[in-house]
Length: 496
RNA sequence: CGGGGAGUGGCGCAGUCUGGUAGCGCACCCGGCUGGGGGCCGGGCGGUCGCAGGUUCAAAUCCUGUCUCCCCGACCA
Image 1: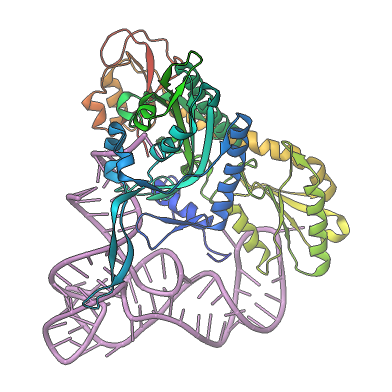
Image 2 (image 1 turned 120 degrees about the vertical axis):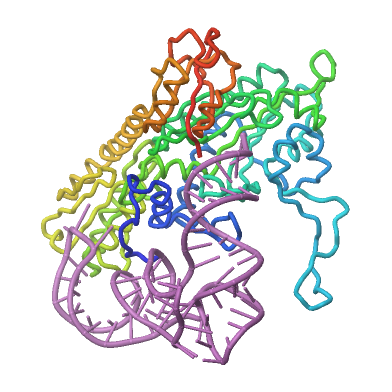
C-alpha cells in the first residue's frame, strides 16, 4: 500500500471484524495470497514477528533449550502410530502423494506423476517426526532431559480462516522436551506456560488468563494441556499459547525409551509447547484503536520514528543527528530502536503512516527547528491528540521515561478493559444466559466441580469452556452446573 | 461443510433489475503553491468488469458452472 491512504473504513464500535482487517491493511502487516487460506506476511508484519521471535528465543535459551530443525514431511505410517493424535488432526492434514508433474496426454496442462510408495503428510505439528529422532537420540537417563525447540511453519487445512488468527499455513515455534520422570515433565510444562505468560504480559502488554484445558479441549494425545487465554477488545477470548504434558503417550508411540540408574528400560515423559503468529492477531485486537495499529514499545520494530519535515540537507542532517543521540540510549537493557523516515512524501502523510503502523513515538523536525533546537513529539498510544513541541535535548533526556510510560500505559489500558469484561458474580446458569441474552458480551468465571459438562443452554449462545484457572478466582463452594462441591473455576467465553 | 453477502484501474465504490462496448472518490505521475493532524490548484497515466462456457447483431449487465474473499455457525492444539 502506498504511503498516503485514507482513514480506516470501520471502527471497533461499528464493525469489529471489518475493523480488524482494516487495521491489518492500513498497518501494512499482511495480505491474502492467491493460495486459499494462506497469507503473505509483509515486511512490517514480519518485523513484528521477528521481534517476538528474538524475545521468545532468548527466553527459551535462558531456560536451557536449544534450536534444531526437523522435516516438513511426515511419512503417513509414522503419524499413524499415535492413534489419539491422528484422530485429532486427520481431518485437517494436507497429503503429498506424488513427486513430479508431467504434461497431460490431452494437452490440458500438467498432471501429477510418480506416485509415492508412501504418502507424506505436511506437518500440522511435529510430535511424531521429532519423536522418531528422539527415539534414536536417547539411550540413557544421562541423555535427559532433552530440551529442543524448532521455529517452523505448519499446515492445518482449516475450513474457515482469518488473517493471523487461523490460516492454513502459519509460522510458530514448537518446543519438544523429554524427561526421565513425570514430575520433571510436569515442571517443564508449567515452566514454559509461565514463559508464555511473562512474554505476553511484559513484552506484548497483553493480559492473559493462565489455565488448564478441559479434557474436550485438550491437545490430541496429551495428558494435560495448559494455555494462556487473552481477552480481546470485543470480549472474545483468544488462545495465545499452549503447553502440553504428554505423559508417556508419545514416548510409547515413538518408542522413546531410556535405561534408568537401576538399568531398567522405561518410556520417557515428554512435553510440547507452542506459540504462533496468532500472537500478532492478539496484539492487534488487544491494543489497536480507530486510527490503526498500536504497538507497545517493547514490541515495535521502531520505537521512535524521526521525520524530517523538509527534505533539504540541513533538516535531514539534523534529524539524523537527533536519531543518533536517541540510539545512544538504552531502554530495558537494549539500544533504543530509532528510524529516520526521509522518504519523498508529504510530512503529514509520512506521519500518519507511522500512526497507522503503531509506532509509539513520532518526532517531527523541520526548518523552523534548526534555530530553536526544538522538535514536535507525538505519543501514538494516547487516543486524544497529543503533540508537544520540546527542545530536542529534552526529548533525548526524557525518551526512556516516555517509552516506559507507553509500555505501562498500554498494559494498564488492556488490563482495564480485560477486567471490565470479567464477571464472576453469577450464581446460576440461568443468570449467565440471561446476561448474554441481554447484551453482556464478556467472560464468565464460574465455580466448577472439575467434571460437569457445560449446559446446552450456554453452548447455544456460542460460549465455550476456555480453561479452568490454575488458582481459584471465586470463593463459591458449589459448582454452577452440577451443584456439587466446586474445586476449580471455569472460564467461559466466546472465542476466536 | 451449512446459511448469508461480495468479486468492476493500487484502494473504496456506482453502473447490473430495464444488454448497446466503463464512471466516481482516494491513491499514483508531472508542474506550481504549500508543509508541525493526513493541504490546495492545474494537467496526466491506468481497468474490458474473478475465471470458464453459453444466449445474442451486441454481455460488466441475462443463463450455467467454477474459484476466491468477508460475516454467522459447525469445526478447530
